[in-house]
Image 1: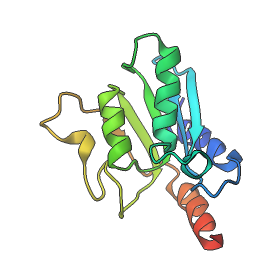
Image 2: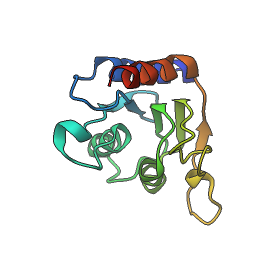
Image 3: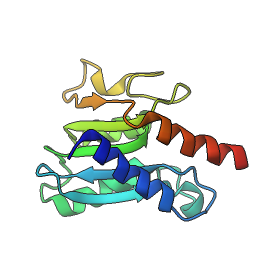
Image 4: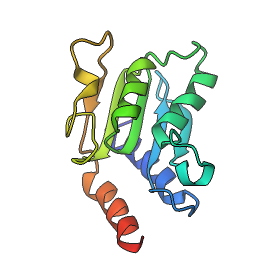
Length: 149
């Protein structure tokens, strides 16, 4: 699958997310062979859980099916927006090999914008990062949400 296909899958999740007041962010974890392991959308408002970001929920679900405990080596996380510090830390700790995302997030992004958690040389794992994939589509989804909130 191409990086565009990966982000399209995340966009599909975000667009189909229930209208709960959550920011429409979608995340999908793909296994080493390109198979989809898990998908999730933001659910903080729906669940009252501050950690219920799409990335964290998708990582949790993928770890349950991947077969290496909590480790997601060889896996790719695709998400519609640049991960925040919590999500960037989670994907590093889960040993995700690649993160591919759509829109950059200059206010809270931790994969190159405001911070660069995933490429900090002090950490023992640094995934490959591909940002700005289908950026306009991903940014429009967010702009549309915040325009109606």
